[in-house]
Every structure is written in C-alpha cells, then in structure tokens.
Image (cartoon, one colour):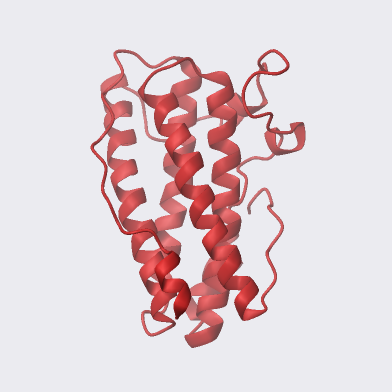
Amino acid sequence: MVLGAALRPLVVADAPDSPAALDATAIAFVQDMVAHHEQALIMAQQLDPGTDPVVVRLAQQIRDAQNTEMGTMLGWLRLAGVTPTNPEPMAWMRGPRPAPGHGHGASDAESSDPMPGMATRADLDALAAARGHDAAMLFLQLMQRHHVGGVAMAQAADERLTDGPVRRTAREMITEQSQEAGTMALLLAQFGAPLLPVNAGG
C-alpha cells in the first residue's frame, strides 16, 4: 500500500536521563502511563499477523517504541522505590490545574476520565478473535482511540510537571503518538471505517 511510506522508520532513541527525584505527580503519571502502554502492547500482540502488512508493520513499530518507553518508566519507578501500579489511577489528572494560558489545555472532561482511550475486555477479546481485514480495521480503531487517550494524558502531565526527563518524555509521547494516531486515522479513512470516540475505558 502507498501509505506504507507514511509510517515513520523505527528509530529507538536514547533513554532519557534518570530524574534525581520524582514528585508525586510525576510518579502517578508514569504509573498510569505504564498501565496504558501495557494495554497497547497487548493489542499489538493480539493482531492477526496475516492481516494487511502495513497494519502489521505499524503494530510492530508501536510495540517496539512502547517497549522502550516502558523500560525507561519502570526504571524510574524502581529508582523512586514505588510500585509500578498506581493505587489511585488518574487522580493526578483530576488534581489542581495550572494557571490559565499554561500548557496545552486538556479539557475537564478529559481530566475526569479514569484512563482515556482504554479498550474494554470485550474489545480485546474481539481483536484476539478477528482475522484478516476485520482484524486490521478493529486494531486501527482501538489503537487510534488508545493513542488519542494517551496524548491527552501526556498533555495533562506536560501542564502539571516542571522541566525534567519525565516532562520531556511526555512531550515526546505527544509528538509520536499524535503522528501515529494521524496515520491510523488516514488508514481508516482509506478503508472507509469510522474513528471510535475516546472513552474512559472498561
């Protein structure tokens, strides 16, 4: 497919420097993004390998990039001496917001979501069972929605964090996942399949 050229080549960037200390917001964001990435890896693994090669390549690109980011984030959490699981998922995103005009301006509706863009168990089961064209379409729909949710989380972190490796990583996620979400939206449009609305997960 012509759109294969639109997929950026896989380049594994050097891991960001480890922060000297993580504040509570940084820890909570990293914990929640680990959980978000874990689901993306599950979806990439469940995609039928016999489906459209462009979609398979995109899934591999996402899996490789998010595996690398997962390693960095888990390393930060180990250094901080905290569990990878957030005991209060997404509470940081509903906390005090920065002054008006600062950051990207994620909406209050986005901030109230438990975890934006997450697939339900039924979604994951359907993806695992799907084959061929149906698998490609469902993967693109679920992963595009997932990325849009991840971008909302990273934007909220960018608003709340001070400069440092965690904030820089959040900004890289905004750029990379926005690009990938755009590619997936383009593929879905070419196939005549609708985008899914971003939800709060299941």
